[in-house]
Length: 248
Length: 215
Image (cartoon, rainbow over all chains, first blue to last red; front, top):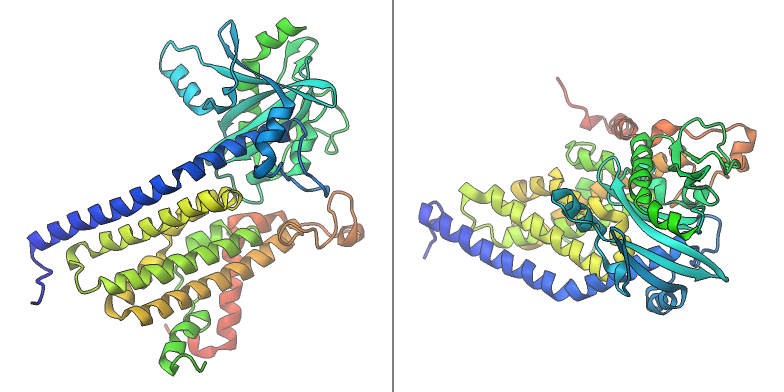
């Protein structure tokens, strides 16, 4: 029997069947792979936090090598001493603080009178205590985010930045060693008050030897990504300032 | 090629040179400009397109007699989108770092005109085996250009290949940089990709005069 593929009823039935078939295939894939993907995301967060505090497997001068996924949970437990959730004035300890979705918290706080939960990790490396906080903002094309590790006086110990879709070769370079390493030693405090670290163009300090100027050298061709990064640090790190004031 | 008949091997080899989707048909330019600032994404994009176009062409070809012509474009879109989502999910589950690096590029495959173009122009009218060869051939033709452009843009724009500093260190002034060489920052910007593609088209046509259209 030859099919009459021009009939309207056939077209509708075909469309419906196609949608059901494709829908089930995709749902099957998504469901089957979900646990693996979720675990990958969890490991990635742990790797990023550890990277920000300088726990990594870097060998060459340009490497950005994380602790491998097989070992990351163990290493994470070893370095991260306490995990806090700051909500308003309240600080509680919570071992799953690193799973807090910063993006969701931000959206909820925007939509109503919800005090957002801020995760903060107390870590210890080579006998020195440091604090790691997540940051999230906008780049040129899409979200940028990262983790910032500071000591008690808010001097940067290390950072990790990542992005969703910045331009390769330009904005995407924020996750390169030479850019992230520049932040080390810079401070978020200037004479005791909060001052964000700026990604600055033409700051006459391209090798970043001046650690008191609250500035790092910008990336050429990535002005908007750099500005977004500055804004992200200003907005997100600032929220932690009251907590750090209490520490000192 | 002993395995393939003359006609079949033509399907693979033609798009590599004399009927190249980018330089002759000028399709798929959008993604060719967007992702070729570095060599590595160019290569992975090429591989992903080979998979999607190869499999997609076969699927469309198998369905060619039952697709209602009124909604055929939508059906083609669904097939591409499905394949792309599957690629994306599989990469996320088993090659997480790679999928992070490619992020948007995988999604961009959906918008690649070459894929819809081959579905519409070839797979709808030919059998699965031929469609498969045609898909692989065109994706290879696309990939070759991508890799050539990516090679030159990364080399002259950043002085690196695969992230390795082949020309020396531009900050420390070693290698070529010691004698005053500078990276050309314009190379990493999309307009330069267009110019590089233009140069490839120029070279290709001046070598093979038969490709020059008459006005």
